Every structure is written in structure tokens, then in C-alpha cells.
Length: 68
Image (cartoon, rainbow, N blue to C red; front, side, top):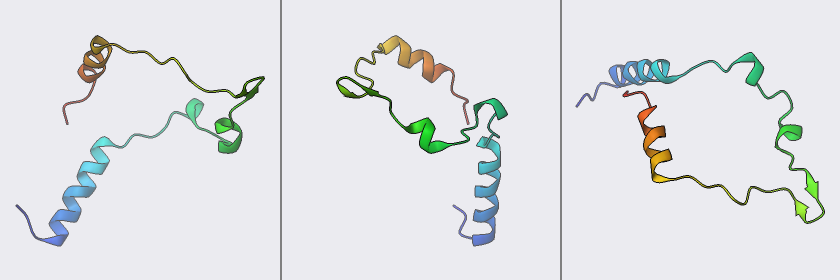
């Protein structure tokens, strides 16, 4: 295990650079308050109530992860 602070910093920076990605221009959120503001319904704020996924969905999602 490395205890040199400069080497640790370098390793962390390299790892961060390897996993960071720039957001796509079309996916950037310009106004977070508007984007995250939940629309109102006759029953109150709109919410996600029935989110279903199977074990196979999870296995497939894990299979899409990068190994590092």
C-alpha cells in the first residue's frame, strides 16, 4: 500500500480521469428548479409509484458496467 501523499493524489486523479465523462450538450439541465419541480395532479404532487424491475433486469444492467 502506498503512503506517499503525492503518489496517492496522482493515483486518485488518474482514477477520476478514467471514470469521468463530459455530459452531452442535449442532456444538460439548464434550469434545475424547473427540471426537478414535480408537476401537481388532482391527488397532489406527481410521483413514481410503480417502478418494477426483475432480477434479470439487474443482471443485464450489471453486465453493461465497465470492469474498472
